[in-house]
Image (tube, rainbow, N blue to C red):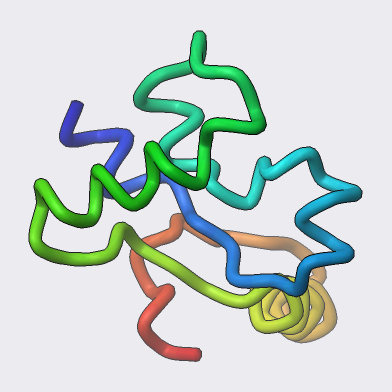
Length: 88
């Protein structure tokens, strides 16, 4: 579904965080196919990339958190829509 590909993020992180998060950093794959078990999300993500010929919107966990913190401190609120993810 196109909306999921636009509005859902894949998070780049290290192996410890992947383990702690049960591979949920592959959030786009999880939302496209929610019945796929967490331990198969990495392979599913790779298949999605191969089919689309590009990576879904991807950001590091730290960059996303930093973006949100800056917004909250500057605006006292968040208006994050996911569309300006390329500004990292």
